[in-house]
Length: 156
Image 1 (cartoon, one colour):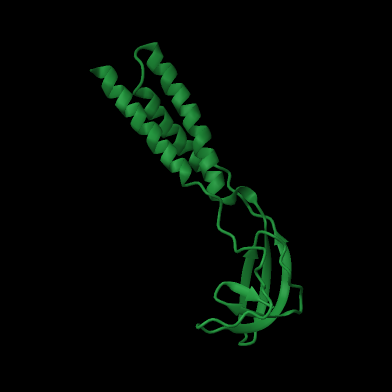
Image 2 (cartoon, rainbow, N blue to C red; image 1 turned 60 degrees about the vertical axis):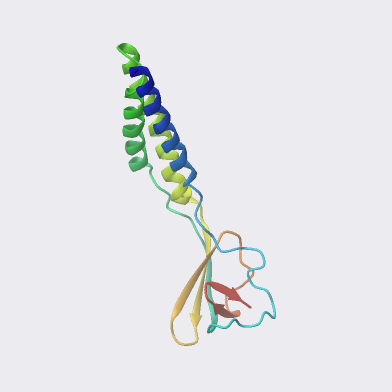
């Protein structure tokens, strides 16, 4: 009976960890190819026009992974504590804590893009404002190009 309860607890913790790991998708980027189709008509919303003021590669800061390591270690240690008995329980707790810490760190670094850089395009709008657009791939615009900003997309 006790073994069954521990097995159910351990399985539940493993399923929860797998579900959380599935949430660790890399950050969203605007598409790099086809981002500036020529001659595309304006959408029903309003568009803003301006000139490209700056195009630069910005290195992401990344994350140290400390919070994910601590939380993952705690969850893994609790899950490991539910398995085994005597000295086996201690070993399972240690293994669970180490495994959880590694998974937690990986999840945190994936969600913070792990230091990946982006190409940041700064546009000086005709109305005096400034807007920035981030792209994973090198954009096909250069400083001085006339562009149209329609939503979160740039067009030449």
